[in-house]
Amino acid sequence: MAETGSMRGGTTRRRPRVLILASTFPARQGDGTPEFVGDLASEVARYADVLIVVPAVRGAADEEAYRGTTVSRFRYFPAPWQDLAEGAIYENLRTKPSRALQVLPFFVAEWYATRRAVREFRPDVVHAHWIIPQGLVSLLAARRIPTLLTTLGGDLYALDRWPVNRVMSRIVKHARGVTVMNEDMRSRVVRLGAESERVHVMPMGADLSGIRPAVHHGNRAVRLLFVGRLVPKKGLAVLLNALHRVPESVAWRLTVVGSGPLREELEGAAADLPVEFVGAMSKKQLRDAYADADVIITPSVPAESGDQDGLPVAMLEAMCAGLPVIASDLPGINEVVVDQQNGILVQPGDSAALASAITRLAEDPELRSAFGSAARDVAAEHSTQTVGRAYYRLLRAVATGVTR
Image (cartoon, rainbow, N blue to C red; front, side):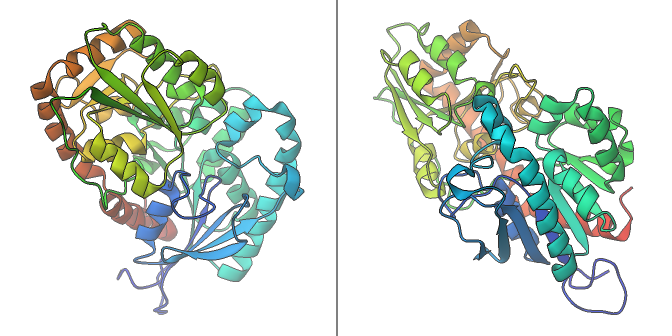
């Protein structure tokens, strides 16, 4: 079947139509909000017409063109208090339980927006990011449209418990295909009842355009870089604890990129350290940060809720710039970071081991260079272009019912 034809076959020559449902999306391109959904959608838009339905956020238009796609945002609560989807929904609920009042209106509004999109856009396939809420909404509002479900980890790890896992089981069984970030997540989805042949390990791609090789300087303090939301699962508290253990003879500086509910607490913990909190960065600013850094640190830990990282896109981008990695030995991360080849893996939460790894790389520029070169080769395999083509092929297969 030609890629320019309908995903469902037949004689029509119109471009295929893909409806994407998501809950994390930037208000404006480059505003610092993770753009992994948009990056993937823009690649799929090379071959298909793409409509992205996402919740409204402050400063965003209700409808706009975005990198070859159309974005439609639904409102779900009175504007002064509408903030459930500003950032990560699960973390927003944890840090401010009163936001639970927005949950039911959110579901209703997304259901209505999806029903309208199905009626007017007439998609060949739905791509729902996150089992809950988008997978549930797709099940209820677009039941007759073939669905590809993508779980990025937060929902699967945090919600895989009774009775929510009963709902998740029904959702994954209904989907014609499911993509996950790592093998551990794949086994969890299969345990929920999905047919193993329909579950695919396909991490989000990293937009590697514009990334420049890092320029390493041997006569300055080693520049450490952390990129991520300031929430428990990202492990910045563990990193700050580790930095207190690094010998005083080691010269280093840490740049923290990201915002979140723990910022004030973490800034207090770093008050006596050479640490700079710069907040969220645009894509261009991030590329500058990668080029100026010597080491990327991803100290992820499982949160009390059970939530944990799948495969951080920022880590892949930094690796593409040639940065060696110090990271937690967690599923997904350890499928890209090979210990002692392109980085160093430590047990999650082990600040002593993290301090030792930082000291080792800080004192050995040749090792940093060797690890960085190997990291660049691995990251290139995860480009948005490569991953986007693979996702489009899978979307076509889901639409035609051939996913085995």
